[in-house]
Length: 363
Image (tube, rainbow, N blue to C red):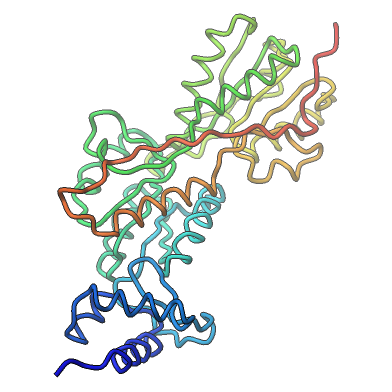
C-alpha cells in the first residue's frame, strides 16, 4: 500500500531535522520511493519554510548553532589545502568558504607545512576522512617541486580545483580545473601607473618562492623591456625564502640598487617587502613618495603602511569563490555524456592608488 503523502513528508522532515542535512538520493532510498518523488516533496516543504536546499542536500531551517555537532552527513565535506603562513591564500580560503557554507557543505581546512611535498599527505588524509572534493593551493617553491606533484594530483578520483596556480601547458595537470589571478595584467597595471606618472627608470623586486613570484618576474621583464617609455629597468630579489634543501639566495640592498640605477620608482612583491623598503629608504633619507614612488603587489596589508602603499590587488577572495563554484558544478554529478569542459579561469587584478606614488617632479 502506498504511503500517504503527508506521512512521507513528515518522515522526510524528521530525518532532516535529526541530521541537520540529508541527501535527496539517500532519503529516496530510505523511503523506498523515487528521487523525483522526494524532490517534489522537498520543493513543497521548502515552500512551506520547513526545509532549505543546500548543494545536493536538504537542510534543516534551524540556525547552525541549534544543530548538534554531528549533523553534517558523511561526505558533505570539501577539503581546502593551503600553505602554512600564507595570508594571501587565507583570503582565498575565506572566499571559497562563503560559497561552500551557502551550499550546505563543510570546509575541512588542511594546512601544509613548509616542507617539500607537504600537500600530498594532507590531501590523502582529507580523502580518507571522506572529502568529496579538494580545493588546493600548493606552495610549489620551484618548478621541480611543482612537477613532482603533477602525477599524483592528476590521478585523484574526486573533483579537484587548483587555486592561484596555473599548470604548464601540456603537463599532467593541464586538464584540471584551475582559477587564478592574471598576474601579467597586474604587472601591466603597475608599470602603466608609474609610467603615467612620469617615471622612466624602474626597479622590480619579487620573491623566489612561488609560481606567482616566477610569473611576475617574467611579466615585468616582458612589459618593461617592450615599453617605449621605460628607459632603464632592473630586477632583483625582494627577499628569499629559500627551500629547506638549499640556502636562501643573497638579497641585494634595494636602496643602494635604486641609487645605482637612478630609479625613481619600484614595484615589490609582496606587501611586507614593500613596507620594509619604505622603512629602509627612510633610514637613508629617501622620502616616499616625494623622492621615490613605491607600488606593492598583493594588497594584503599595503593599506596599513605609512604612507599607505599603492598596490596591485589580485582578486583573492573572488579566486576562492569562483573555485568553489567550479567545485559545486563538479559535485552536481553530471552524467559523462553531459560533462562540463575543464575550465582554466583567470581573473583580473585591480590597482589601489594610495599615498606611496606621485607624479615625478621635473628635475
